[in-house]
Length: 170
Image 1 (cartoon, rainbow, N blue to C red):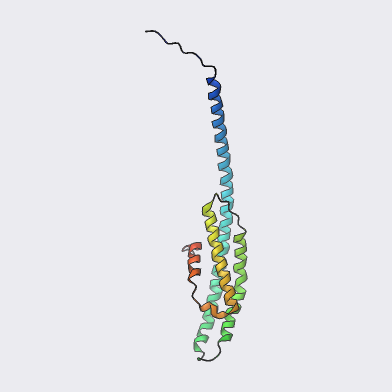
Image 2: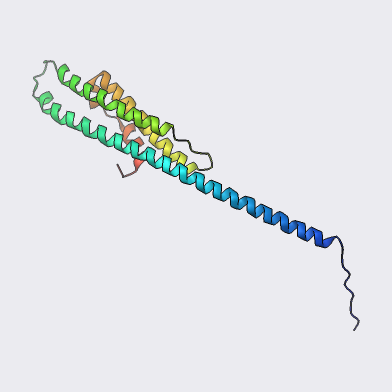
């Protein structure tokens, strides 16, 4: 049997070497991109977590203060005879809402200042849920501050936004 002679092809070796270099450069670019994204995501997660903490604290504190004023005013409202003025009691509720509203607006400002890149949609959704909840809560408190009777109106949208922001945590 005759042996076949293999001829060297002078142009092939540099092409393979160039391909290897390109693949190595691509791998390096991907690795650097992953490292930058990992660091950025960590920073954004901390900022969104801080926003969530601010939102939860503002929500809990306003829940407590509004619940306390309701507990204080409710028996008096129920004991006032029909036709008598209840305005003084509703003014107390309005005053409490005026005091609570700045806490919620401050938390809202913190959350609105959190910048999340579009490449992290989950973090962006969390931040947006906190912002929507706080904005609705601040508007609700402003309505109560204008007229204490607004506290006694049903607001299912607040419950829905609260659930979207906190799930079962708050």
